Image 1 (tube, rainbow, N blue to C red):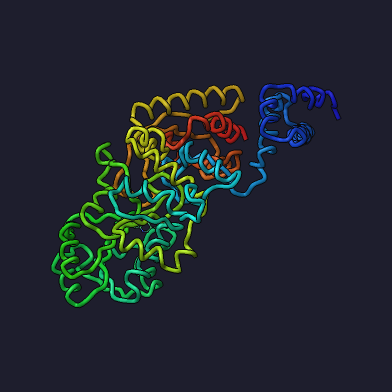
Image 2: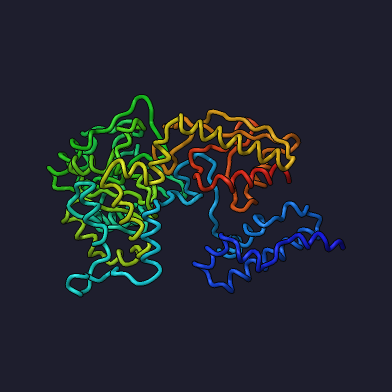
Length: 467
Ligand SMILES: *Cc1c(COP(=O)(O)O)cnc(C)c1O
């Protein structure tokens, strides 16, 4: 064994003197840092014994491995990945990434204790929902609000409390199934409500609802079609008209908005997604929507509307089983706070920021990724075709199904390596890289790639092509 190959490896005490390791020592115990460096060196020696070139195990490579060991990234099963699919709200990739402000709020409430259920003024017991209720009301115009585990839970709770086993009217065109086999018809059945279908698949008129109201339904349910769109000969009554009919019979209207936008995307030229405020202003009694779709916060089901109905939901025993924890509330409150100013929301909330990026910005981003990649491949002596290409990104999460966002990406082709194998190798990188295939090329859509992931991405793709 040629031990001179090992001699080029840096010593632990040398690594400890470097600036970056000094920084680590501020947030980690020194013994842990030393152990991580030793582990990285052990892996380097093993790799050299296997025939790796000493050049591929310089100080920066060792520090990278040490940092992964230190932060436990390579040991955890749930890992951060690079989303190069261009799908902004990808349920399999954890839907919405959080704003830095939300992450900071989560960290602050997670590290120690919080006033989760304590009224700091009176010193008495408080309500966990108080932390977000006022903000939701201010942003939507609703009288009262409540938050549960997710929107599916919200639908269940609302049907359970407001329909309570009685008939509920819903248009045939809204009996949808969304991802994860969530079916409106099934959840209604589970809640005990009796399903009363009105109208037809493509057309439902006011008079169809009127018939149901006269036959005595307890609630009218409107459901956002989410990941499906009807085109052509279709119609449904405007919300205002539906609400007026229902209220004439003293029957409340509940709208499941699905994504539930607080931000007016129409004004930004993207799609025709209704805002929550529009529903509230149309007189809808109860609205529910997800926290981690267009809103851009964490998994949650947000319920808002008339106080007399929200109060009933707050008293339902089921709420205890559907309640959210402090981390959810911290992330949600901090994200809602950003919505107080449209421009702050658009630039600070990652989902909105990604959706509203300009094509010029995306193109220059793709060009700089391509040139960084070419340089890295050349440095490693790896061969691949890299080109910048126009692509279409999707919003995902059941929002704006027919709205493709023009974007730019980098297309990759490696002679002799099938695309499926490239995808597989990309997923084996650290962090794993998730891309897609289009016309026999692997596509990296830059819309959903964060600037701080750029170096990891280039390194990961280069490894993939070299290996
Ligand atoms: C996404 C969606 C749901 C489920 O929301 P989760 O927050 O994922 O539970 C319910 N209804 C509609 C219309 C949806 O689009």
